[in-house]
Image 1 (tube, rainbow, N blue to C red):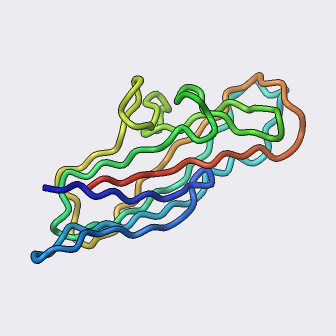
Image 2: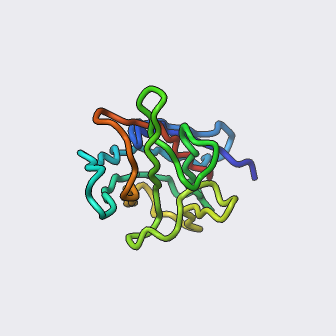
Length: 155
């Protein structure tokens, strides 16, 4: 069976893409979209981490099975930590599959996890929470830091 991949760009999570295969029989099809993980203001003097969430929503037809959803490294060279940038400055953060923020959402390599589901619901939206966190104690200047992460659904 041929695997198909759809990629959505997340402005630390945002975008939509639809992918399908053409064949004589009904082919597997999935769509994916996302909402941004927006951390708001980061105070360098706070001693606590800043948490936020975003959402990935996917829909697959009955022919899509054994799906996985992975997230890219974004601007980072590794998954742990990911970085948001403002000019030459970097602010470390990460994205997780769990509310405890212990399982880094990546591509399944380097100790990261992916979302997987053998039999997704037929034509039903599935909402996945993306848990984000900025660790405390990072000495950065005021301003807007950003990153672009891609979410990929394989089916």
